[in-house]
Length: 347
Ligand SMILES: C[S@@+](CC[C@H](N)C(=O)[O-])C[C@H]1O[C@@H](n2cnc3c(N)ncnc32)[C@H](O)[C@@H]1O
Image (cartoon, rainbow, N blue to C red; front, side, top):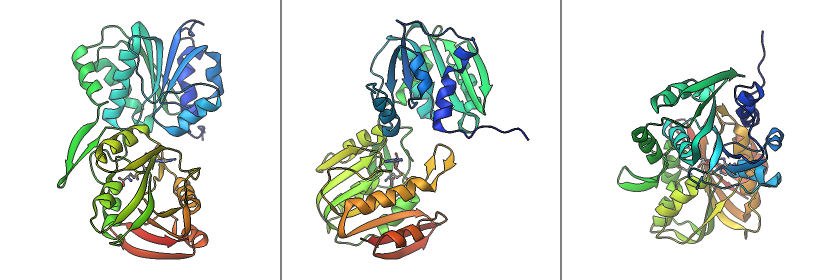
């Protein structure tokens, strides 16, 4: 049986250079500018001189910072780059938004290279590029599709439509309005688990608090507007900068501190907290990765003060109960419903 390397974010990123290695494209010259969007740093990128890395994800941005670059969260420039290399996200509108961003950022006749794993939408890239008027070349490797095209003959009407997916939009969920944006976790709905957590929180939460993995701010909003709660300080923390920006709009009436952080590590320089609410992520790309949730639990433990409480919801099948019990002093399973479990864990 043939074997494929495990598709980590890293080796998908490295395949952005595959059309250059296979000589389908000529390597960027020293003076040519290269935008790398949605990918973390890997050593092969050091073969290119003039790179601008952009990613809204803290982990990717940190990998560039460690390598001595100055990563940005958003692509600001127009007609500035000779090449744009882009690892698109799985969410359809967000991926089209990324392609539009790159096309707008390229100089006339600049080269766009787009990659996605086949099980994260790789198969549809070529069709999209055709739709927007580009003449493409493509390669497949390691269950990924890599598609490239010169930025000529773009259909402006479709470019405009796809670019609109890059903006915050106001959506109505139940009776509430939220700003959100394609690509943010669960961008056009509320998470059933988060709803269950809110229904099962105590009525008189108080003190210094944090929302770990706040997304566009659904959980934060619910506790801040709860009349019986007395929240003195709230940190809304997420690794996705787009989520933080949306949360900032949604929670503008309240005093909240926003932190762009990778919560696989405990936040530093934060005074110990009275409580944390969280619905941790359990996906790294396509793969279920319960390790992220386990790291979130450990970070929450570190961030809480003694006798502080973690209120957490997770899919019932994920292996969090033992870790909670081995880490925290008292752990109660508050409810198990709709294939979710809500826990209250006291340090
Ligand atoms: C399941 S969603 C919950 C979102 C929101 N709290 C809600 O209830 O709708 C998990 C959130 O964790 C964020 N996230 C994923 N990995 C992260 C990491 N390593 N550090 C911080 N946040 C992360 C995601 O961007 C996402 O917003």
